[in-house]
Image (cartoon, one colour):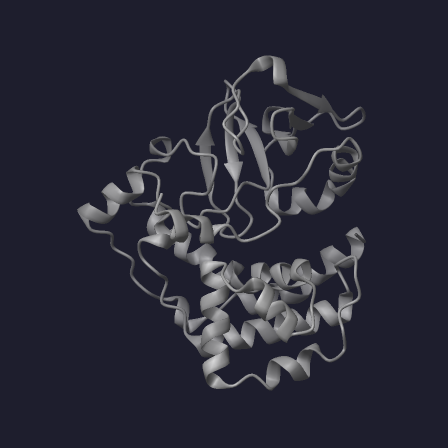
Length: 273
């Protein structure tokens, strides 16, 4: 993956994130809904955001155009993508938004748009991001940050893309790059499989930039990039994720996998967690 192209892609779509009239909605959870959240259900499975389909479609087109221009993914995005998107019927556009929000029918939609499922997931994530970021801001103030100690996002259910160590004691906070939510998690333990056995958990530290660590789990062979803010000060984890792709390469070569590849909400809808 070309880091420069990826950074330019995100800069390209940044302007379209600044103002979406459809995002100005109140989200007030009932006592019963809060109880569901305490039982481990992400908010998105309890109360769906009121996203205007027209703005979702507009955002998707902007993301697709930026993707064609900057080619931020390993495989070439086809020139036919824009016409394929424009040819979608009104019903299709509604169904596409539903697919994006719920993480369902991904294979069907990727084939319809002539994309690999990896590129489709990438586009959907970039399209949803501004909507779910504001959604998170509207709901998370209704909870205490230490009331959620799960390894997936309390808002959208995504698995974390990064973590940071913060405060005097180096508390670990996980980070979701889909909705920009950060939440507290155990200092020792794998958020992906729940493994807390120290003998199967380790980390590697960057030689030059000492604020970076890559935590490794031998049980599920996953990894999690982490920034120590006690060393470098406050950081933007979205930018840090892009800037540290070399660490991804190091972990991948070691046989570990990155777990935030796809939208994970479907597992909650199907299992009723």
